[in-house]
Image (cartoon, rainbow, N blue to C red; front, side, top):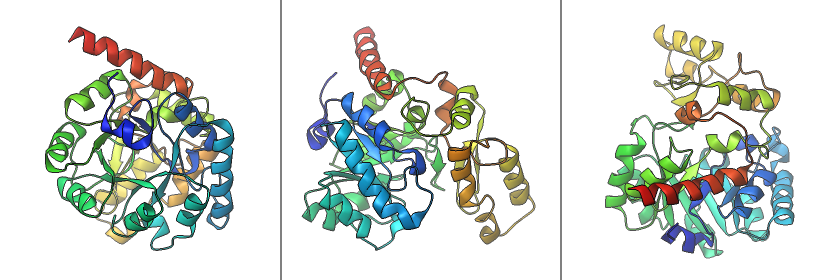
Length: 318
């Protein structure tokens, strides 16, 4: 597999990044990805639903990951959650983490501060306009995330296949592709579109190291090509598996509920409950459309290795 600028930027062997997935982006998962040559990512609240304990949890997760790998790993922050508060960012700096991925907010808030302290910053974008803004604000790379991705989505509804080449053409910094990628075929396609790496979330949920509830993993494995749905188009678009909850949300939307009402249906706690407690019927199973392509639970390292080996075969056969 050829090296890209992403490999050099992050000090990794393969340009494969594990997405930051809130409660389930834990140290063991991140370390396994990093040990396989990719870049594992920790979420500050991994395994800890009490936000009041997140600072201690983040420090513990970083130290746990460092005990499991001597390779680079990073931390993901949702700007919508941390706002202007830099207390968690300061923990990352104090603990010597050298990569941060961010999204759901302006790159102007924290990019400069992080770079002053020697941290590489990758920002998630969903349009050319946002990619250009991230570049102007000094980020080291952008993660262009298409509408196939799980969780919060952009109202612009740009799919990965059309988003990536336009972002690549618009910025000079490295672009990573995200959304709808889970194997060597998606990886090869992303590079063909001009990306210099990929970020994957859903594929890494269905791994042994991920701390998501087993029911959550099983629901992803059982998914078909039509199993996911976008809810909240009038407020906050979110992709996840179809369920009694998403049916209720759609009925609420169709009844003409206000955007304020839609923001409370489902509650933020519903996704947390599915991740940790495994109620995949009444709660929200966040995942990407790529769930229909995942048919088993494997080690995170095997995910990385299968992409590397498969990519070489694909390129040889072109």
